[in-house]
Length: 434
Ligand SMILES: NC(=O)c1ccc[n+]([C@@H]2O[C@H](COP(=O)([O-])OP(=O)(O)OC[C@H]3O[C@@H](n4cnc5c(N)ncnc54)[C@H](OP(=O)(O)O)[C@@H]3O)[C@@H](O)[C@H]2O)c1
Image (cartoon, rainbow, N blue to C red; front, side, top):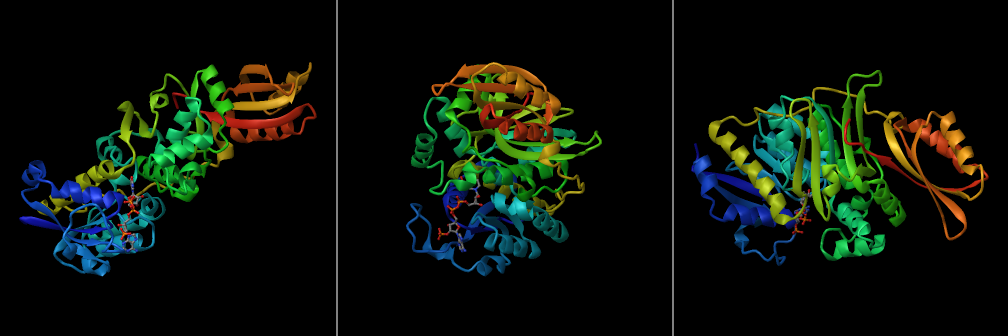
């Protein structure tokens, strides 16, 4: 047992500063539980002269990661630089040197998770990454440990705060551009918000969650990904009228019973019934809904980004790693994947759909459209028709569950009908139950 466990901090940006703040303030719980102090010994930054708004001795700053990776007195490396270049190299080197690693890096874990987890296992070191999904919301540890007695059937979440904020504001009547500008002004959206808006950030996170939930490696590139830019105020209005909220949803489902077994993993705008707990998650909040065969339905809710929420998850991982070091039990509970479920192509996935079509406002049009749906085994559950200012008919169809490939073929034919002006939008409806 040591009196002090030294930490090397890679990065002192938004998250790194939070980690410094939380680890530097007195915390009797941590000290008593571990029987030692946690001390940040060195901090890697690009620019040591930068004004950071925190009081840190200049002697701690370094600009060469090797000063941490080669330091035998540093037992835990915290990676909060982001990206997959230096981060991947540093994490692998730290593990190879037998150090425990804590990372908040979703990109790293979603693309190279298997590589770094295998390296951790080989070296008998710990690799924890709670903050990589949902920031301050505990979800990795619950899936990995607390729910291990369950078969997880579905993980479904709102895991990008920027897009949830924008869709919430649109639900309140604000336009897309104004909502995005407000998200940027409040610091929720980056200056270049593409990764959030296009769903890439959520895709990386659901890849991580799917890998752990189903013990089968899913990478970010395998996630079917659609962003929110096609969602219009009109879609949101019709959703309300039909009893739904529109959310950017990340979904991972394991179908291990049917002929086409595999993982259905996707990120896209979806309509959720207003009485589903996820529909009530507004503003920049995140929530992850988990269905297990033993526990039933669970929801994890909270702040999915920000300095202190994220740092809180990093510090919890540091304490777990330190506890394992104190007891010489590091690396005992890994989570390398041992299944290899195929990823189901989106065309084979079954969902219900909302479809908004603009067509001629004259007799027989609905019948023509309905015939094409029928020819493709698409069954309609609900129809709303309204007249537009341009004298067209705006028709909303809500389908029953249908194989996506059939629906897409039907829509190709419908778009080509003389009586149809445009298929304006198609949004999947995610039902409450699998
Ligand atoms: N921000 C959040 O709310 C949040 C939430 C969950 C997870 N995360 C994840 O946490 C990680 C860090 O995010 P962040 O928002 O804290 O990033 P950030 O504010 O951009 O900070 C990055 C830090 O890493 C340092 N750095 C970057 N490249 C470096 C290099 N080549 N050599 C030395 N230092 C380098 C930077 O140094 P300088 O300061 O000198 O430039 C900076 O201190 C990312 O993986 C992110 O996805 C963030």
